[in-house]
Image 1 (tube, protein in one colour):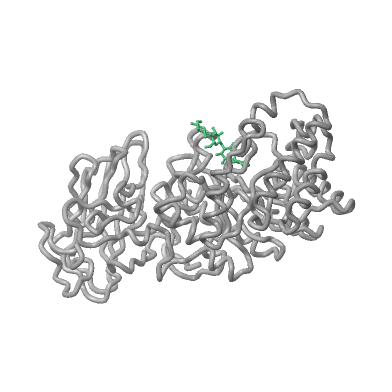
Image 2 (spheres, rainbow, N blue to C red; image 1 turned 90 degrees about the vertical axis):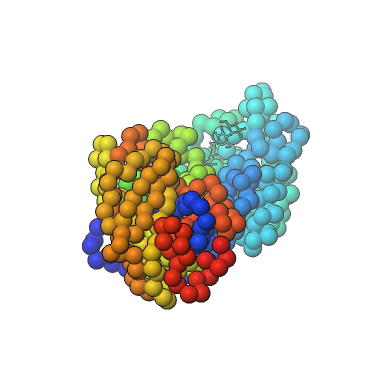
Amino acid sequence: MKPHPSGRPRGIRGAAALGLAAAGALLVGLAATPSGAADAAGPVLRDLAQAQGKYYGTAVTASKLNGTYADIAGSQFNSITPGNEMKWESVEPSRGTYNWSGADAVVNFAQAHDMEVRGHTLVWHSQLPGWLTGGSWTADQLRTLMTDHITTEVGRYQGKITHWDVVNEPFNEDGTFRQSLWYTKLGPSYIADALRAARAADPDAKLYLNDYNTDGTGAKSDGMYNLVKSLKAQGVPIDGVGFQGHLILGQVPSTMKANLQRFADLGVDVAVTELDIRMTLPATDAELAQQKADYRAVTDACVAVSRCRGVTVWGFTDSDSWIPDVFDGQGAATPYDEGYRPKPAYYGIAESLGWTGDGGDPGDPDPDPTTGCTVGYTVTSQWNTGFTANVTVKNTGSSPVNGWQVAWAYPSGQRVTSGWNATVTQSGAQVTAANAPYNATIGAGGSVSFGFNGTWSGATPRPPRSPSTARPAPRAERPAVRLGGPDGTPPRRPGDRAWKSA
Ligand code: G3I
């Protein structure tokens, strides 16, 4: 990781983070970088992970697998977990009536993108269909329903799923067995029976137990540890343990690596299966910097344990996360923001996996191969009704820029009150900053900064990308740093590719 000269918390990266939206003819598009797809300069998590002998995975929502969402999932991750589509209520909503559409979509996507699949999940107390939870079954009937379900689902995807979360969340917080439908009717033997049924249906799939709040050592982790030890001793087919990793900002357990290692020492693989790190909204730069450190620490723990197969994030974008629905006022838990812009956390992961480039911190350039221009946006201070922001425009091209504008939107209602080092104007949600006479020229590799004060109420999120730019858009719709005069005069930079294509 590159040290930052100021030692300050670092903000989100560049133009992609700003979500620039420009009015009028756009001369320089910046959409390539925020797509998160591989670009020449940015890290690719799946490649970095593979070089470490790991995977980096994401949970997805099958219905969202198109456009930018699909581009990022398929290019940055080499393992995929269906967030809901393989759960019992999804695949067998009525007894004997199966709906495999969502699960098939995820598996097909994985195959098309050379990804592993984590099957999630076969035996859980939650998201069970009403016909199952409402029925009055004898123990034998319930056991047969469970093993038939496993046989059917695992059998359908035989050879296509590398890891199955066979039993999910079997423990209470104190390490005793959860009083689930399964445990209360069948006793603890349901776990061994489930594993055996899964092994019979797909001998090559790695079979996991999976739980939350077992990430560090403690009573619940001890419960899992003792169970795995006993299953191994009985010869029950158990290949791995999943640690969900639903964490709170700044609270990565210090014992995580040691905990993963002690399970590995039992002779099973381990994986972080549902990583997210939540915080109270709105997220500040300092919190995003902490989150970067947290994502890095979790990934470090996996990298340090040779039997750790990989890490899966529970949704890669804040627009596809369960956190805001369940934890009031909390969110921003994933490595990409709601506009699919990589957050500092993304760079924390990349750095843990060995990446040494710039990104995720204020002052880091945001390489953009299309335009040669990058923009960084940092809220430098914030109080109950106001804030101060700083924007840096960097010319990453090889010739000077003469005249520039930066445009963005504040749909949450922030108002710019005064600016410096640029003429900053606002009309409705739309803000435009044009160069001052004395900083119109940005030399090759150089940068200029401007700042402004603003007001806010309710929330002051970062400027989002406009809807038209959340996906690859025709050139003229792309967000922009506009090179050239504020009146639209052409940039005085001969051969500017973007200008020509506008
Ligand atoms: O599909 C319906 C939709 O038709 C309806 O309009 C909407 C209204 O609320 O609900 C939709 O279903 C939601 C479903 O996610 C799909 O989005 C459910 O209400 C919601 O409860 C369900 O939440 C899922 C949660 O498991 C259920 O416990 C989350 O998406 C999913 O991310 C979450 O994942 C779990 C793991 O499987 C196990 N570990 C914990 C993790 C987080 O809870």
